[in-house]
Image (cartoon, rainbow, N blue to C red):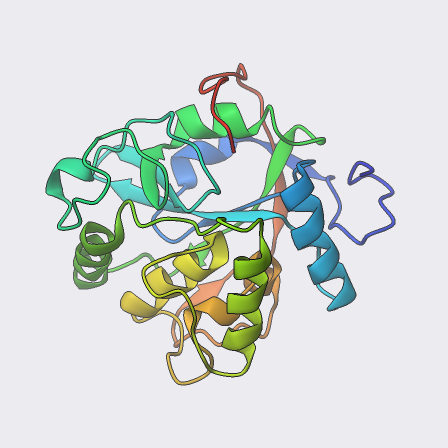
Length: 244
């Protein structure tokens, strides 16, 4: 896999770029982080998107701003290495631990420091949501998180289930109820906040790159700005033994 600079697979440019330390204070609930990783699973996901004519991102995650705290909400294919600050409030007790795999909330700086070790370009693509999420939409998000926090990313037979569920979504169906892949979780979160149309496609019909598409069926007045590159200007590390 080549780097994003001059890449033959159509990643957006990495310049001009904004340092993470400059953009951090402007992040808010619903903002999106896109990753371009070098893992085997990431390569498969990016190839699928490339063949579909979409920018090849291998992972997507959503920012949560709760008071003065910044968290990241995502569904990685593994990763029991970050404490989930919302786990004590969760209605879903299948994981039984504040450190768990599956859908998870984690401290934004900590998990990005880890993800910065998994990308071949040191940074992330970001797309920010406007207007800010209202209190009632945030409450709806918290209720949704409490119900699905810890639900698994299904990889029992490699990644065949992920692709099967995605293809079913494109036909308006859903497979493997009670599991989530990354873009499915973001789509469902947006739907529960009333930001993404529910009558268009089910959550499992979305890839990470779909959220970079200007034709994403958002519910007005919700709007996502242009995608831009954020360089990681902090130390890397954290979760080094995390398998994801």
